[in-house]
Image (cartoon, rainbow, N blue to C red; front, side, top):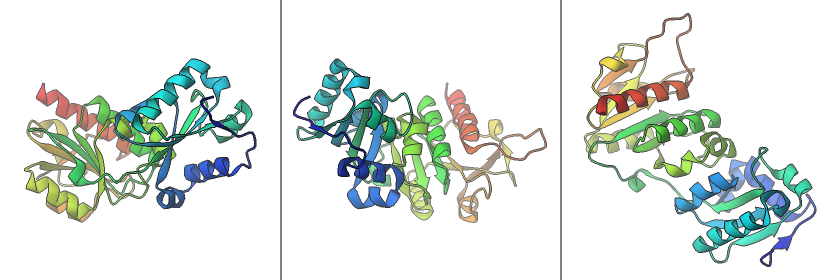
Length: 270
């Protein structure tokens, strides 16, 4: 296939390197690479301008025509992309999840900072402080994509943006959205310099979210379920908002809360 290298052993250095990238953030930082699985996710990644380094293709699963198409798309971005052909038994061992259609890619990392974000005149931005679970981050990104948020900022991140669980949970939204990582201090200064109103989600000293004006430039800021937001964010806020809790528990999953607040901002703007 297209002059691809054929690998038939899970002990091959190519396979070991791929698995290390999947499992260790240290390896992703060291190599400047991360892993994307599946045609849909890879398509979003390439459309977002990321550069493919190596494609691992199982033609038995992917199909000959689909393999040709995938290679052609990758070569439009990087004509020198590496190609590794693997049998189904090897693919099953290295695939992070089932049903990913026989293609895995190593992608060149790129920094995503506040200065890379380009906002319109009336943006909605979601800010997450120190949320550590990749699955939660991925789910928030899906909600942000669905609500057409302008950007997502991860403050003081406890997981890297290219964690495979995050990419999987976001089903590629980490690529379809403008996403940046920054410190809390830098983010607060960035938002205020652009006249973006800061709304912090918290139980204390707050008003109901649907009684809060979100029609202007707005940043919705959320923290972890266990500790909430830091005092720095509470002090910087223009308003504190809450979702009414009518049961015995006092918190929602951060991804559920983010979806509620994002779609309220969308509702107010329609």
